[in-house]
Amino acid sequence: MSYKYLIIGNSAGGIGAAEAIRSVDSEGSLAILSDEPYVAYSRPMITHLLTGQASFNNMVYRSSDFYTENRIETLLGKKVAKLQPSENKVTLDSGEELTYEKLLLATGGTPFIPKMNGLQKKGVHTFTTIRDAEEIRGKIEQQKISEVVVLGGGLIGLLTAEALVTMGLKVTVVELLDRVLGPLLDPKASAMVREVVERNGIQVITGHTVTEVLGKEEVTGVQLDDGRWLPCKLFVVAVGVAPNAGLAREAGLKVNRGIAVNTRMETSVPNIYACGDCAELLDFLAGNSRAIPIWPAAYVSGMVAGSNMAESPKEYDGGVGMNSLHLFGFPVISFGKVNPTDAEGCEVLSRLDEGRGVYRKIVLSGNQVVGAVLVEDIDRAGILLGLMRRKVDVSGVKEALVQEDLGLVNLPKAVRSRMFEMSVKNNIAK
Image 1 (cartoon, rainbow, N blue to C red):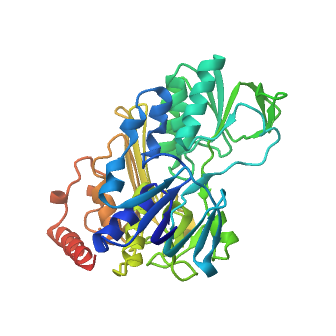
Image 2 (cartoon, helix red, strand yellow; image 1 turned 45 degrees about the vertical axis):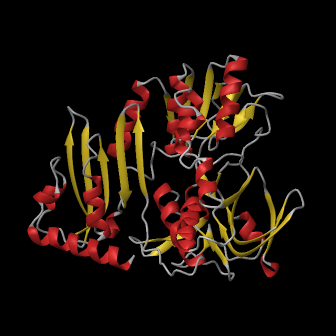
């Protein structure tokens, strides 16, 4: 088969690209290929699928009608074996060959699995897809599992642990760093999250990792680097994800940690684009490109890629690392630089209400917001993010930034006008 546009990947980036293509070109042949057999679904909701709080239908955000109405051919449940850029060709593991005029790699991330002995045993799982959730749920129900060890105290690990403890299991989280959510939160916010996690029955072990999975053919426990042995029949590796860039690397595209792209989402090879978690996107705060594995960045970079594939020039104006967590009803948001070093010379503003469990931390550099952590009271995150993106001088309103009632009305007229002007300018540019 031959297509004008071929998209590999059926999640946020791929969908954003398809929508952008169809907004420009309603006729060109377009196909989305994915190794999963499902229409587009919300990956963050797989924890709810695991617990039974949601069905697959609740997770779908683009139904089969979307593909039909937009004349998108779906090639689902098919795996790519090789890219051949010199021939504009993609070969599937079935041997089938597809050709294209424009190709988008929206292959997302792949679970990062640290080296350790015994990973081949039954009962070892990752947790990023529907299949992972179904396999774990099936094992729990069939084998009456009661004890689980989760490796990883980051976003994926803690959300996995929350789902499992909700199902009535005894859960232990093992994290190599000295605190949970270490790269995403500062020590104070991390300690507040850990308190909530432990209060809800999850044991947390920090400063250690798993060195071996124990058992003959099936998991019976794990051994830590200090020699301790934790019994379990289910071991979930939820350390995080890495850019799924293997196909691109093997095909000769420039790949660093992720696939290298410019602001038009073009790779080093003509007519091949990349977006989302598999690519290295512009970080507007740092001024360089890096992996930004979050849904909004994937969708927006996909839209930019799709527009350029359809020859409607667009540029990606940059994203920033932003993480949102709602754990046991306890909301936390962080973005930008949250753990500045002394050498960076940043100014830190903070406000803590111990009684209510509310914490706000704003990091400034040159009188501009460069990072923030909000715990429990997160309603004003959008204002702070807007100030950061627009590089607004906040020298006259610093104390207002950490107040719970922060709003645009609380900011001086000059600051409000600046944000409005930048918003209009950005919308016109787009």
